[in-house]
Image 1 (cartoon, helix red, strand yellow):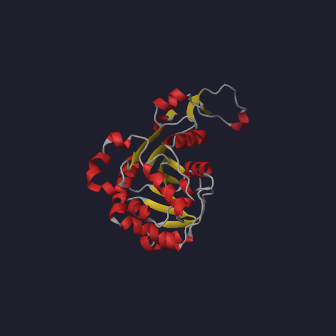
Image 2: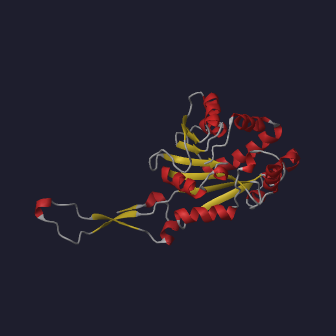
Image 3: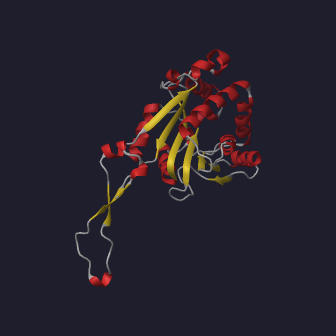
Length: 272
């Protein structure tokens, strides 16, 4: 994850969301994120690339226990000021998360993959530390707004000079390369330019526009699924008496066929 976010950039980031256009963008993005995240109060959430804490603050209001990680000390400084001790903040890289396997219930990467040195490794790390769901929020390379941002990056020095944009298909391909065959759900927001304001508000919330691949902001949900299940099977090899007696059956671990994984939820992994 690139750390080229200085104090000026951190300040500009927050100021943009305070403008009328930025506030509208934030509202649309959050509505889609919440729909796919499906947060439950008390769950542990890691926001990777948490920036100034603008999303962490919102996640905390939803009742989540929040942890943030960012590579920019300037962004973290602003996040500490905003959250006032209400979040566990870490300086670090998305590609090398300093957390244990399955330490969090949820993880989010919002405008993070665009600035990652190795997006695939950043995703793999997010899946490693998460036990229930990972949600991505990514700028769409095929949206009109993304083209405008790229042009701005060519004409003036701004943060989009460092950004790498993605498409829905590229994200799905990258996820399946890491996780194998897995169910992925996605939607987009900001199909119309924010300057149109109230004229397009109802259309932006319509399922047709949220299920098209050309919205400026992609939200993608990945549910973490179990790769193995356990079941009881008769013990075929007798044990030596000195090792004592085991109950009628032993546990065997095997990989289920893809059809089984699609039809059965992770909660049903134990069979008598």
